[in-house]
Image 1 (tube, rainbow, N blue to C red):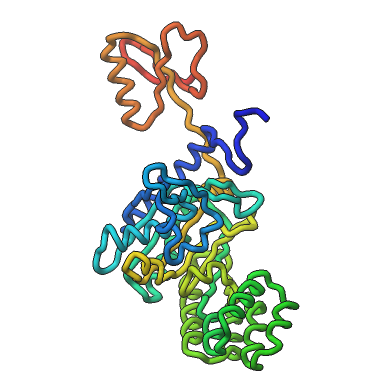
Image 2 (image 1 turned 90 degrees about the horizontal axis):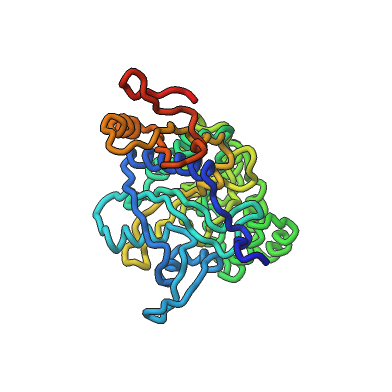
Length: 383
């Protein structure tokens, strides 16, 4: 095996794609900034306990682990930035009231989440702490849609779900934790045969509710069916009302929207409404989010929290690529103040200016213009 080959699902990003991704990243950070989200940059490496605390335990199998040579303790390379941002909110900022934070950096996965995805996603996200109402859920959901629209993505579809629906059925039926775990796994796999078998010994209303969940996917009519046929437990009614209001607010912003009451992705991570965005050309969700009010508990502050994240590298493949900008070729001349001034002005205006090196035999690539002297003035001409 050649020693310069990279591991599977790890790749270099070459100039054109790197430029395209960076332009997307900047535009999203600028958008999040003007909405009041402060940029943070947690470390790539920290002790495993912090990375797996609270809701972050789902990331255990996705995390690369190493031994710290200084302390002898186990350290992890982050697989998700949300637990880190929760630690910053709870332990470092420790602000009263609402805190809005955003981030854009690489995470590492021990295995890819799908056959087409990298093990080094570039995660961009936003988190809102300190508010538990529907308004903060809507702010985050609308912000996610704005970020995706800013990227140039077309044909946006959003799924909305709520973990309180399944949780309410389980809680009020007094189902054991072991059986709850089995039901969760079966619903995730959409295995109706196994679900029917497992529901055999349950009370009729509980069994009917659980068997109905996989069918509750679609437009607003799904919520009406759910209101009529699911048990009228308080948490379920509240969840369905929140979904209805969220749907009304998001319908004008997306091409299509659906409700999925059996979506339990991140069930042990989320505590309320969950959502996912999809687009043509990608079978996986391009952005995910939801409410996770318990995530800061391990850091001493179980504050209300909601947020979203996306993989910018995956998103960049779905939108039209911006070509790498062409530059201006300038001659190499020592102590030419007029030339130096012209180059400085062009660069300050955002132009790429590449100064040819002495004895350079070929023109620099990626230049479609040149800086030449005409009648004592330095001017830009097409090559």
